[in-house]
Length: 107
Image 1: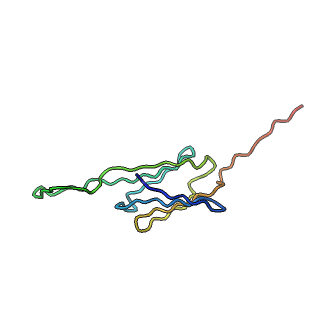
Image 2: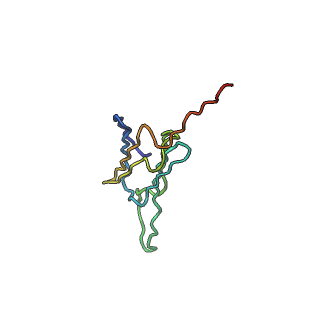
């Protein structure tokens, strides 16, 4: 699983996600219907046929984690940075996709 620390600040939330063993290109972040999904995928490296492993402990596969951030958050509101096996995200408390409340006039 992708272990995550979430820090609340005055203006938003900082997420620090551990993704050890994954490179920047192995990580995909999507935002759909208010859900932020972080997916890390590592494909199996093709082995040479003349090698015989007694044991293999390196991970190959996919890890994913989703967080509900609200439907007013857009992709451009989220800031992401990857450094030394940790993905750092900043998500503001209020997004730029605010829906205005419309009132109906009474005759």
